[in-house]
Length: 554
Image (cartoon, rainbow, N blue to C red):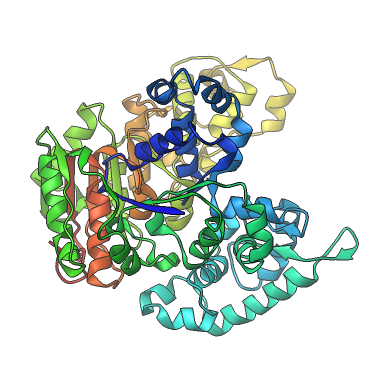
């Protein structure tokens, strides 16, 4: 077996390099012989898309391999199975041996187990339950780290322990109940075994003889974002590589920020200090941002005794550092004013990113700018911020309605659904009984179905579901300025979820409260700043809590 390590700083084209390697091996192997493992479903989808890409095919296609390239293009089923994650790969190997817990019917039977432990009982998907529920997060991270629950609990900081909302005693009881449930649940009238995501991987590497037999056709194994593999994932990868001719591991130890989920940055720093292939040319960060990022990570390089060559794009780029001020008050600080103007007057995209607790100052600032913001469902659930799409749509409907536009009864009911009681439609049953198809606002007021004051289109206080003034102003500004709800140029995500992405502008809040070690902090900041293609905006919120807790990490 030939083992090859590929390292490269952010934006140097590691994914493109792996796709090139994939195509190069098609001269000797078929698509079913090549396995590509990535850290997340999103990353696997990205690689698969690049393999499908016509430009990639045109770059590598020759007369001798034209037929096999045609096969790749047509063989989506093969790529779905062979470009995947460790969990999905292992899942395919245990199908039929046990029921899998990602079945929604099984999921529903779990609810009663945890009703006494949590107030948040509404999970509309398997992913939602496992990603958000504190118990499942705790158990997953403990097992990904290869540790018993109590051992993992002791390794956490006090602040990290608080994230789980339970005591260790409660978590251990829940875990015992969960294990009992998996081993004794009756499905279709018989007691059966149920596997969760970690079980699938553990079953795979614990049954090495069977698993190696199942992997015997894999001749080329490619691991993307190898620095993020957990303890149990690395064990599975070693089993998968047993019979391969080529074993590629690509990653960047400087971007190892999933330590809490079982990744081992120290081992990857050592393993990738002298890789066989090292990418140098950056295609994302311009000079100024490249220099700033290298200053952040310099201490890490010195600690592990290596240096990276990381060349920037030709453009200069820009970093903007704000003083400590209160974003939520929207003072006339030049930083706040410049950032606002940039958002409103360009077509560039922006990512507001953070690490720590709820980024309240960021949310308030974005809302007061009055521009639509894209927030992932996972982030919404974390800090209970609900993007008011329906409220905006209803306000727009009401705007046209108040100006005399006729509306159907269905539209009218939707418009008034979220209003305060004093503004709601009166005697709706009577209105339904005289339904003539459509109405105007004056007729409704004259007949006493709504109060006259509701005609005031600027009265956004009538929105009952919206609790804060910031949110009301947010809705008002979007409606009054007729901003496109589909124009998602502004995003809000934490640093972990933006890894692998890039944006014109990165806005980083230094309010990071987790007491991680100094190198963890530097890697975290390095990842966040290296997403920027044009401008890096560095906030310091009014709490005066900076990146390292007491002082900024430079």
